[in-house]
Image 1 (spheres, rainbow, N blue to C red):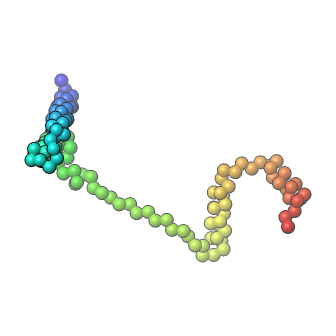
Image 2: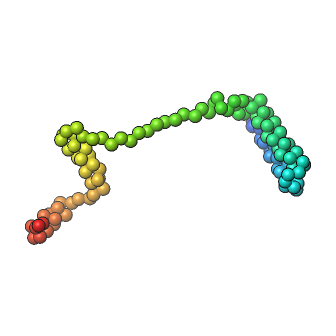
Image 3: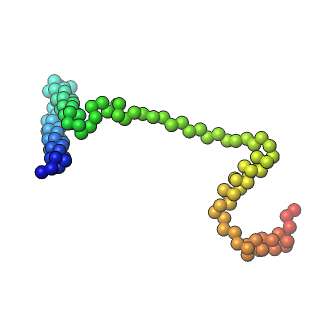
Amino acid sequence: MSAPNKEKRLIKEMEKSYAANRALLVESMNECSKGTSSYRQHVADLDRLDRAHRDEMAARGVVPENLGQVAQQHFVYISHVSTVPANREELAKILGKQMAKACENLHLAEEDEAARQELEADFPAK
């Protein structure tokens, strides 16, 4: 059996053993009354089991020993600022972009434009 397969099998057995022991402790803990010393002991045993499992996984190199150093938190700040045009050229440029974006999904045909001009001739705006 190759080394990677042996390692995978060992990790799988560790996980299976851990899950079985944890399920057994939880099942036993559910039979205890909360607030009793036996319940408290079960909580302590669960904690001890979890710690031992994490330590063994770190010792075997499955997970890093100090996960806080590996997974660092990063913040990305994004700011959305509306622009105010400084002159008429910039205003025309901004409005042109907005109008183009607003009209992207319009499907205009020459026949529609001709019908629109005919209607405007027949019914002029007041």
